[in-house]
Amino acid sequence: MATVPAIASSVIVVSRHRPDALLRAIAGIRQLDHPCVELIVVADPAACALVRGLGIPVKLLPFDEANIAAARNLGLALAAGDVVAFLDDDAVPEPTWLSRLVAPFADPQVAASGGFVRGRNGISFQWRAREVDAVGQDHTLRVDPAAVSLLPGKPGRAVKTQGTNCAFRTQALRAIGGVDPAFRFYLDEADVNMRLAALGGLTAIVPLAQVHHGYAQSRQRRADRVPLSLHDIGASTVVFLRRHAHEGDWPGALTTLRADQRARALRHMVTGGIEPRDVARLLATLEQGMAEGRMRPLAACPPVTAAAPPFMPLTGTGPRNGLIIAGRVWQRKALLAQAQRAVAQGHIVTVICLAPTARAHRHSFTASGVWLQQGGLFGRADRREPLLRLTTFAARVARECRRLSPLRPLSRLPHL
Image 1 (cartoon, rainbow, N blue to C red):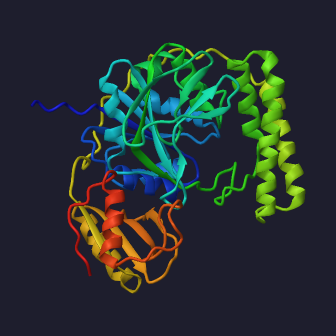
Image 2: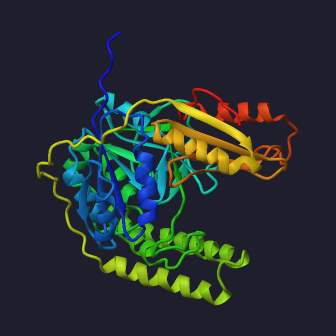
């Protein structure tokens, strides 16, 4: 059987004042098993200098404005791949992420694709499959968690892709004018989804195309997800309504927005993240944002016609061996040292470090390029599991290998 050529793909990462997160994301991208990928980084000048210092082939563009949509359009203008994928700087992809995410584009009807997103503990899902309607409200989609679903849009509703894990046919995204810069933050990809759905294209939901999203600190929120301002959420919601909804539907949508954001603020107050006086302050920023969104100029999004520079392959990507290194918590230093040596040799390395407790598990990607899972031998990984489960060390490691094997290569199992 003939081998199907890999789809040439451009990965765009936008970053602003988060250099450590950006470098970690790039470390993950360099472990992708996709053999034909170029990396485009649009970031503040200081971060660009750090990326340049890595000495890898990358298209770099300095940009230091608080407008992620405009930054993504700058990256799109540089993209020479047939498919363009977006990854946030505070996210790390699984090694199989891009190969799985772009595979559906072999079908010419597919215009977009999106995968599942794991949250801060690296195990629970933060995002799976949803639709978005004309007032910007999300609706859960039921899909097969082990198969690709090809879904059309509906009148006034589109299959939604999440900005930290999505891809688009480059030609289609350029034809609709890219990302609308009126959405400086929030709902920018939902607007793209609505515009593409109106043209009749299919969206692929690819559950096994997964990224880990950490929620790094930004001007909108703290690292613990406590909001610092709701201004951009208010402004972008009103812009979305102006773009897609009947004016008679605006009051109900804004009432829902106020209620949702008030409930969000109260949850953070109850858990001690903010003080009671901060609730009113945050809701005031929401109102200010909504007022600004009503006045924000809305311009047409002309097609992106500029020719992209030639494709710049990122060296070192492609299929490679994967190793599981497992041991006890008191061996952690030796486990990580062994793992880092294996990473330097080109392996994808997962370390499982277990304590003799029922502590819940966490899974993360270290700055040195190692996938690290830590927790108790008897503790749960998936939050739907029992709090305590008696098992042996070998059985527990085998169970975690079965869970991880669809996402990354796991070729052998040495123990310390």
